[in-house]
Image (cartoon, rainbow, N blue to C red):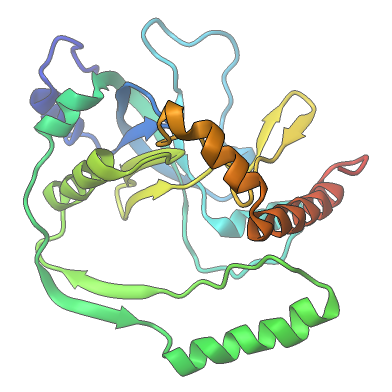
Length: 263
């Protein structure tokens, strides 16, 4: 099944939702949003994912969409908690690009209703204790300097489904700035909706690159006439100076761990 490029965005979305699994993704500052859908399967290892060679068929860029759980890092010898999340593979059968304004206009715009507004999974006191242990046991012993301690918030949405998920995506596409990916993915079993802030690592041939956003001046959203003054202010900011030193030091340590000749 293939989507007709002449379809209007609402019809394209309706056809997309007939697939077993599907995704709507905007990459970086792209002027279009990608819709892909197809059959789903689960594999145990990344080595089980088939790889094609040669150019893709006309009008196509992608063969598969993968939802890779963090636990797959165990394949590279790292320790990780096994939460049972599946490695889901979507064999792309349809792919279409829709202009961003047209897609936003076609997406549902209904407010979310909550049956339970939710709460943090850990209390303030429990979270403070976790931070204290990290400072004493990890940072204090030189195991790290720049750590983000997750704190999960759970709530219950009424009537969650495609319309609600696409409505959240609409608000993200309309208001989010500078995201690496803005997306909704239906794996056939679970929903993934979000706006990832940055590309963590890129690999081209044998070159590995990491680009931290911490301690880095970002031009997006800064009017051109203000850029020089804002940049000079940024360069003189002591907090940003030390944050950049810290982040670069941490990323060099990671590169030395994963690259065969160091960072």
